Image 1: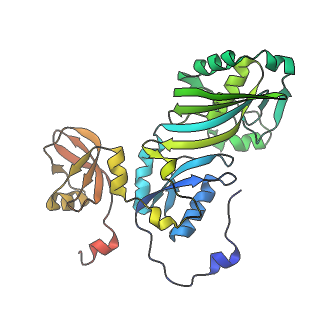
Image 2 (image 1 turned 90 degrees about the horizontal axis):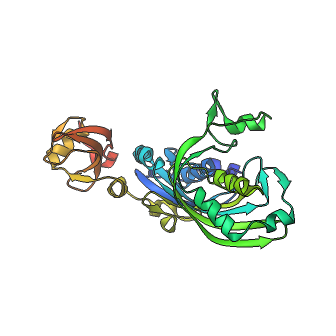
Length: 319
């Protein structure tokens, strides 16, 4: 469920708080809270409403959620599409109408059917779900169907069949196989492109083995160059964990250093001439190392794609 402030916390404003700087915040999301709930907690912890996230995690999932604060939300467009890494537990023995443990289970496989599923068959089934795939997303997803979210239609009792979409699973590796009474738990790690549903991998593995399957645990450990080991807990002092936009951009894009006049011109949206190879996007930094903008360089001329305005304190006295 979403975490909500109590009335006292929501109303109490003992002192004016300095606005949070433009930055990126890595959060280790706990289970039981929505991604929107994490954003709400961050807004309160940072004292600003200008917070967004780069890619939803289901409430049952834990792990890395990348947040943008202030103008750094403009970087999220490029982070959303980054490859991701997950640690997952797949339970074989029954499917679910949501493809995870939060839904209603379907028919349960017999003990004899499960006994016929060898470890080798599981590893082979995982291998078949590795590479370039056409994946049918889970019906309980945020994909829109005729203007409505698929999960909303399912909640209304409608049957939703979403078309398959191309995804790439770069690694789907079995870490352990544990057999219990009426189930087989498969722990795995998955490296995949954005838009891959790990719940759908669990469903498809179970279907391929003839015993059904669903996801029981999921932890996102990586988004592009960002790792959960570097993330803050929601209980931490969030402002001390903020990363400036320039440091984030340097992990995502090639970088070009500008002189003072070029930085001013670019900040005003002007095209500038640079003696650098063509590329896009490129992070343009001013002499102090601040991110001025993301640019496209073509034939030696840089054109602004996204501007990052200087903080108000840096612009005092400007006309």
